Length: 281
Image 1 (cartoon, rainbow, N blue to C red):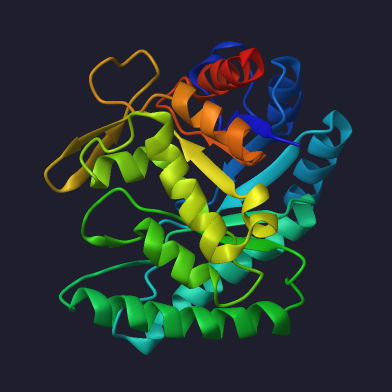
Image 2 (spheres, helix red, strand yellow; image 1 turned 30 degrees about the vertical axis):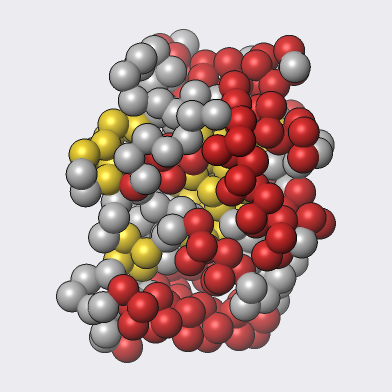
């Protein structure tokens, strides 16, 4: 089943007097949405009791929950100590996700740094094989770990790189941020066929069953020659991308992803807008 929801809490959540993540479950459900992404962007600082409490609140509302691992993960860092920290950030996020009853942990794979591109990608791939082993050692293999396509040119995370990483093991599922792709490719996503080309590439490489329920981030994003600058809202008319052609491509290819809105402040409203666009087709 296709699912739509926000990343974190929108401005309207706080405007209505809410403050706790447990309250997000009812807020999202009452809006007619299906899922929610909790961000550990600044670090995994949550007690097990809190994770269980959040999980119970979302289960009660029948709203799915996913998490985003800390933003400073970098599996291409030459330092082995830094890589160890990155493993721990992903694993800690996975443990909390498991307690919350969720299934998807999104993470940023790496930054190129001063390395040649292929050397950085190859090192990232090697480290993700180690991460896979840690995932199994920690009994987290019932979850999906989702390397994300990235918006800045200097970040590791083209669609091809993400697909390459997902070939390592079935625990890895692509997180395709279409706003990021559009930003790093300087406005490449305009038509249904632009989207279909990328979706069909994923299906050809990973198989339909794995791609059917892949992870999606969507928002309009301002970009420069170096890629992503900042997230916008659906009110923006300059940058894009637009959701309608993606909705058509998903319908045509019979894909049912988990779609998270990352709009700046209007993420719940824009998630609902996407759901209405999809349902109108």
